[in-house]
Image (cartoon, rainbow, N blue to C red; front, side):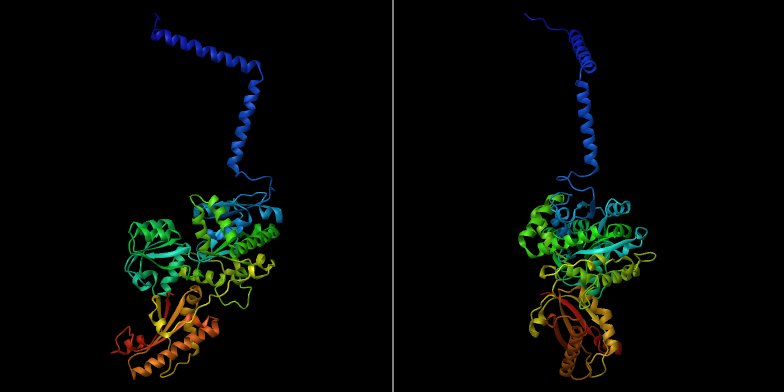
Length: 523
């Protein structure tokens, strides 16, 4: 029969075995080459780990000369990422093959962290939007930032979702709106409120740290409306019964422009390399714009590099922007004398004034001339249809009756004075139209516009209806002739005295009723 060991015997045996192992290993380390091999392996692995932490692994040998570009999770930078064959510097990149340098895209979704990276020099180029850039340009002036090219226009990537019962901008009055302040979302909201004759004081802003948080607030039904990104807009509609998209940048098509900034010193020291980056980026954008297979490839690249993004999401993200071409950049920087649409200068200057008036900007804001650098665009020669600027939207003609019934999203009443019985515009009337509505019409370039003429109840109703229509036609003709807007974009209506907004029993009320309404309408 086997005899069991006592607990003390087991402990003593264990101590003897461990001691033997330790003494044996020590003898091997002191008297053989094994120690050197182990040490070298550990050192090699440690060095490799430190190297991996320092920078991402790359495909093949590439030059040490790499442009680092800070981006966010957005589809508008696909032109450069597609031309680069990915986000990391690699030997298959056309930037490397055609120009001899590498390009590295670094995703910096944290806004503050991205600006710190720019200050430190961790990135050479950094994303911005020209509408919101006035709010930070002054703080960055020690680094002399310059806007060097435009990457995209948002075309559905930003949207305003609203709960049941809100059908127009006027319905937002007194409502709670979730928005990330001092961001493109904020700019979009300000434009839409202006188009509807409202201001920030007419609504209750529920400030959020990001558009993603704004979407969450809406889904939790903490607010009546929210400015969100796509495809979060779809998630909002699915989460809140009866909700709808009030407006998006599909029709508010020239408000949010993504650009890239660089330090002036970096531009001066790397001009030709920057020009080649721009040229390659524009070639990539043109190829995506003109070929569905290329767009799919770009979506695949985005899905492989953005956290938690699949290919279908990435494809939607690309479809929700206009990847700008070389021709678009010429328009953006005001280099095309025939262009009458929205330029970078117009957007930047207007939003500088708006944000300053609202108290969001303290101190001096740099002028457009101080921060704009069009030299890359001017020094690049790309021709052919693929590189041409985006064409103006073509509107089909609608009948008078059909036009009257189209749903208005936003309506802005403007007082345009006419002499009794007349319908010609004088210089003061033209000034008022330019000041109050032209920029809105340009910004919402894909929206149809209804112009409604209105009178008080003095005189014959039929005559007033005819006169109010002629006055609305005069406004339409001015916008077409002087500002190059397509004639079929407009619906002209003469209401006469039939749509008063005040009592006709007083002179003050009658004066309010003699007006022209500018309305953005749904197709």
